[in-house]
Length: 94
Image 1: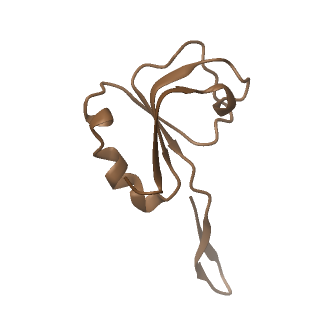
Image 2: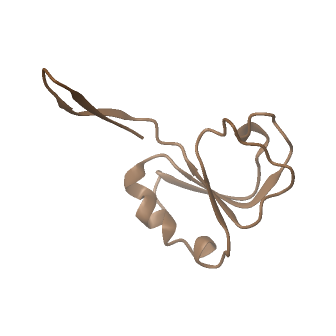
């Protein structure tokens, strides 16, 4: 597994939701580089799970119990200017 993908078993989600509710993910997969997403999606933990919840920074997220399945946490934070001219700018935000 590369450095862009981190896999955690029985991961606490306290800091991953706005209200800091205590909950745990059976598996948490963190991705810090969007290029690693395809590799993360082929992990056995995902293939064996019936449920997948994808989260970002956790704002506007409230857990009321431990979520079923796998949590995929997109932690990439890059901002890239794709095109910039006199009329418009196209920006890609991870």
